[in-house]
Image (cartoon, rainbow, N blue to C red; front, top):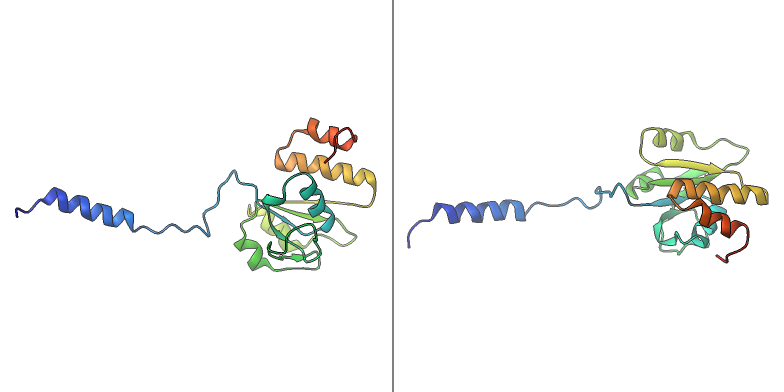
Length: 154
């Protein structure tokens, strides 16, 4: 059998490129919406608007989200390691009298994710939440306005 350098080169290249590992844990689709919600009210609204498949992290109090979705924490305490491993594109929190966790703010400012908070005390606050979600997640404001005005059931 005659030595074929071209065949050996092709086999070596195939082995080299075929054995490359892909780090799927750190691979992140820049267009993919991955939401962590640390507020039961925001979580329920996300589910009502059809974003349940996009929620990758939650608080222990978010009962609208399946228990299979990891608990990341709440406004009083966040598991930052778990949060970072989930690679969220958005983190949503509820405004309270206390300030938003400064480390969440710092992570957002570093480009780790978009951080948004809403006050949820009155009906007008809920409307602002729904319209704010449309801005954050790219929904049609017209469609959400129809929902808010009660012309369409969620």
